[in-house]
Image (cartoon, rainbow, N blue to C red):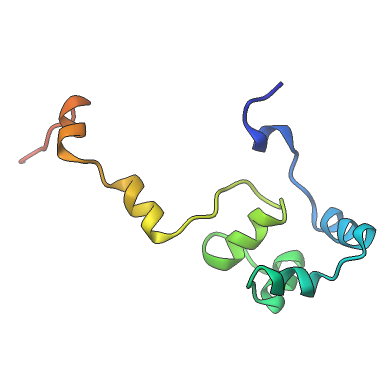
Length: 98
């Protein structure tokens, strides 16, 4: 059994997503509004008119299961990229002064 949830669930197609909304009797527009997503952008993502590389289109695609990824913020990225000096030293990373 895979330990990564992304590996366990195959990605959905646009048709899979639309079918699931119909099966559950839910509106795509209501889903978008309940998550503070632009309704128009959700429909553009589902139609394949957006590349979904960053921002809200990325978050929509990940939320709908259309692509792998994580939904984060700039502060999450800054925390990930910031490596304290003492931790860098312990990992054997030294500054290059060339």
